[in-house]
Image (cartoon, rainbow, N blue to C red):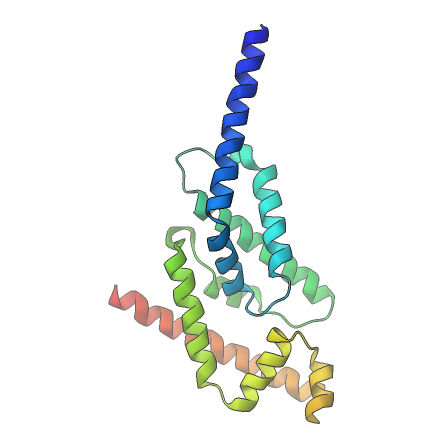
Length: 187
């Protein structure tokens, strides 16, 4: 009886060791993926931590031999949506779920090169924006300023900035989608 218990503990320790190895091996990919879903957000580290904790807590659900990174990206995507919901409650503007889904990877596409491609596509699309539009995006997402703070600095109303940011995000969404479509047609 005690030999069975020891064997069970040894098996569990081996499985836990494999999860630790996979988590460690894929940290950079997870971080890059989260940055692509939350560009410029100061919350990326927190969401990465939450993702790691959830992956650890649900490690029994992972089946050895299945695609760990696809599973990890799916968990990360859910954590980003939870973070966006919390942020929305705090009255900040964030990418909506549709845009998040456009930028996020499907489980079949869960490769780091795709994350890097989408980041590059977003960067190219940002370069196409007018300087004042880039300034609004930079103030909101890179520096984390509220629209009210940026309105005070620029002399514009917060309402006009909110409308401008909505239009800019829509334009970025369309631009990234075009880049992705072109990329997929070339494959």
